[in-house]
Each structure stands twice: as C-alpha cells, then as structure tokens.
Image 1 (cartoon, rainbow, N blue to C red):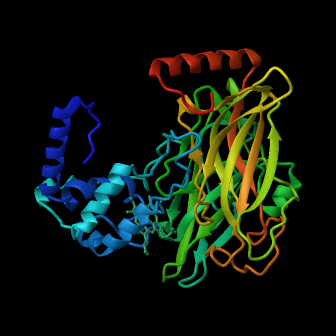
Image 2 (image 1 turned 90 degrees about the horizontal axis):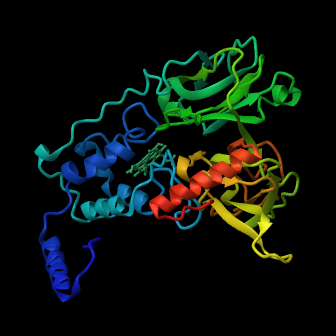
Image 3 (image 1 turned 45 degrees about the horizontal axis):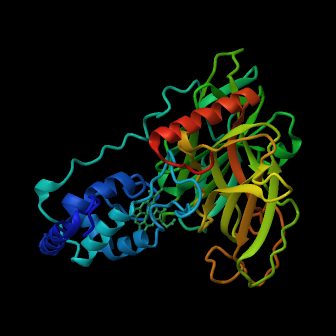
Length: 444
Ligand code: HEC
C-alpha cells in the first residue's frame, strides 16, 4: 500500500507498516464497488450491445467470464485503445481514455482475488448512453451522410473503404467551428472512420477520394471536436468530404452509414485564426522497408514558416507501422556559437496499431506554441516481420504508396498560425501559467 502523505520519522513509518498490514487484511476489490465505475467510465462506450467491442461489459454477469482477459489487456495497455508513450512528450490530452496506474492495479487485485462481485448495494447507477441520438457539439448547421449505405456482409475480412458523402451544399466559403461524426446505422460494424476534406478544384483528391485536409475522425467514445475559441477551419464552396471507413463483419449482413454534423460561422464571417489540419513530415518517396525486418526507420520534415499553436496529433502509417515519434526542432540554438539545435519530443506513439487511428488532442495549457522556422521532425518505425499481426506478407519489400499494403509515414497535425506579436504574447501567457502551477510542461 502506498501513501502520498509526507512521512515524519519513525512514527510515520510505523503507522505506514500497520496500514500495510491492515491493507492486506482488507476486503479485496469488488466489482460493484471498485470495478464497475472504471468500466462505466473507460470501457462501456465500446463494450455494450451494438457497439464495436466484441463483448458487453455492462454487468457483473457479462464481465466475469472476461476477468483474466480484462486483466491482461489493461496491464499490457492494449485496452482502452490509447497508445501514447507515457514517458516522453506531452502527457495531458483532452480526450485521454487511458487508465491510471492505480486503476490498473485495482483491476489486477480484483482478478487475482477471484473477481468477486461484492455487495450489490455498492453498485453505481447504470451509465446512460445517449450518443446515438444527440449531437455533442450542439445543433449542427449542416448534416451530411454517405450517399448510400455501405453493406457489410455476414462474413468478410476487415475492410478499409474510401467513400464520398452527399454534397455539403455550401454556396460560399465558410468556417467550421465544431464538427462531429457518428454512425447512424450499423454501429457495430463501423470500427472507425477517418474523414478528409477536398477542395473543389483538387482533381487528384476527387479521383482518389482522399482529401488533403484531415477533417474529423470517428471512433467510439469520441464526441466531436470543438475548435479553440476564435478559430475555424475553412471549407470552400463546393468542397467534398471523403471518408475511409474501417468495417468489421459481425455474422449478419449489416447496412452501415455515418453522419457528419458541422457548426459554421455565419456567412461572410472570418475567425481570428484559421485552423489547419494536414499531413506533415511525410518522407515522400524515401520509404525502403526490406522484408522480414523490424525497427526500420524513416524520417520526414516540415518547416513551419509562421509561429503556430499545435492542437492535435495523429500518427499515420499503414500495415507495417510499428511506432512513431514527433520532435520539434527550434530555430534558436541553445548556444551562441554554431551548435546544438534545441529540440523537444512532442509525442510518441510507442505501439502503433493499424486498426486504431487515435487522434491525440492536447490540453489547452500544453499545446506547443512554436516560433516561425520550427521544424517538425517525424520519425516512423516499421515492422515488416511475421510478428506484426497486421502484416499480410513479411516476405515483401515495401515502398511508398496509397494502398494499405504500401507504406506512408506522416503525422496528421492540427494547428493555427500566430502573428509575431501574438506569439510573444502566447509564450508570455504560458510562462505565467507555468509559474502559477509550479510545473514545467512539455513543449513551451
Ligand atoms: C474505443 C473503443 C473501446 C474502448 C474504450 C475499450 N475497448 Fe476493449 N475492445 C474494443 C475492440 C474493438 C476490441 C476488439 C479488438 C481490437 O479491435 O483491438 C476490444 C477488445 C477487448 C478485449 C479482448 C477481447 C477478446 O476477444 O479477447 C478486452 C478484454 C477488452 N477489450 C477490455 C476492455 C476494457 C477492460 C476496457 C476499459 C478499461 C476497454 N476494453 C475499452 C474496443 C474498445
């Protein structure tokens, strides 16, 4: 048993030892008291009937047979799906669904004690889920869906399909201040959806059904993205939304469809800052992955020509993706002579899993504020061995390309630009905030 209280000499130590003794004698963790609240908060958004989790974890009867598997999955940090390296880079996110060490320890204790139910009187009230019939961003100004339902056969391998949506119907250029995507049909076959925005004159995007701006992503448990105050993402008149839909067969033929809800600034209004969302730090054609090898490294770079605030990060690789780190290389040297560049790791995804495309949204107070000239350095690692369960053929050489069996290696970054004056002010504000909190946060 650990205590976070300061210790005052031997007396405190004695007290601590006896607390440890009584800790051992204490009743074990029970489902109703200790486990149900964790499952409600971190698991049931996916693990309930009709959702993508392979089993429901709403009740003790449903969870009990999975106890060993639950322990294994949470101890290995495969579940909930959240793959940020916890030892380096920014650690505060708006959409963090990961468990704390204490929660993982509680689950382990519960399973090791035989997964007891406990007193039904301790059980929390069942959580109410209203995500299917509610827009969490508020009433959208525009709602579009897929042109027609996507039919997922009773039995078929996981599929990643590119599709277009209905026309957005925008007659003039507009700015999006919030966006949400959700399945409206066949929840359980829709694993996730990444959507992109294509400008009306982008012929390549129209042909490949892949836009060049990252729009918004759907994965269960995510309830829309409200852009920071004073920002908006430009959607040109005639722009199109494309989506890459990851579907999962569930044993019966199921029709799936999803809807996008967009909140817009009034016609003719511009936000103070335009949000950008782009693939950055891609290595271009420099991808050369030999067969049967892992830890194959590929680097890519993007220069920010203006000061900026980075608001989110998502690693993008394909079947052979293993891990990715994003580093910021600042233009100022740490020495007056020609010398070391000042660098800082923004984030690492230490275990990339091709079936989860999580967008990691930085908490306001840790969003990197970067000067003009900062280089975003993306380091991607690939695993082209049989040990990678998403690898369809480890004996193949892999090069760059759009297909999931070819590779990519970039970071989807959301950011907005600042003027020099705004930059100076933002850095000063951040420093004051850090001083107040008495902490040093990563990335300025
Ligand atoms: C965002 C959705 C989501 C959340 C949140 C989530 N899971 Fe899962 N879980 C899944 C999916 C989907 C699978 C199937 C495997 C995969 O796709 O990774 C899965 C698989 C599992 C498995 C393995 C089942 C098997 O077939 O062996 C366990 C155990 C599990 N989850 C437990 C949990 C627990 C416990 C939590 C919360 C602490 C949790 N999950 C949170 C979606 C989720």
